[in-house]
Length: 173
Image (cartoon, rainbow, N blue to C red; front, side, top):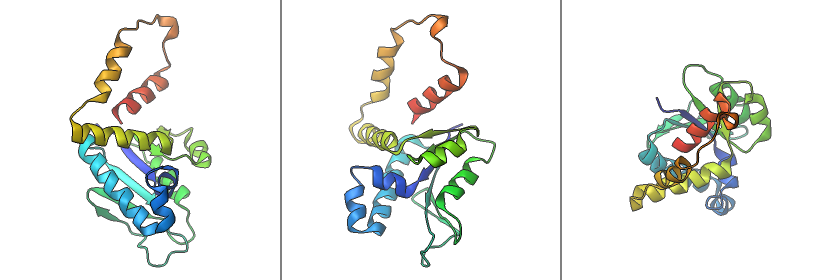
């Protein structure tokens, strides 16, 4: 079963070299470009994606959320931060969860939960790789896997179960 991606929207926008200049011009345009990039990523990877934006202080944003182009979009309610909403979504049990954020506070809060965190910069690079594969037909992941398959490691170098699971999730992203 594919993992559920929960994305800290503004954090990803502001840490992306592609999206941050757009965000500086118009914040709503930055959100729209992020959602369209994620929709393209979803075509390539087929992961369920939820994007969380901070809606505190914005009265025109719907706190109920919406779904556009297969991407679930949520805004935090008045008196709630996006960080709190992300943590509550990630703590739900039942499926593997990957949280995309560079916010150290969120990562520290989710450390004990059974979900993995990936930095916004790393995920932005994963989006670029997936879009390249989608439109150019090249499979970058297979090329990388072949180079690792030749290296034999003894049992003394085996990663922990959690580390192996994390590596597998990152490979699939």
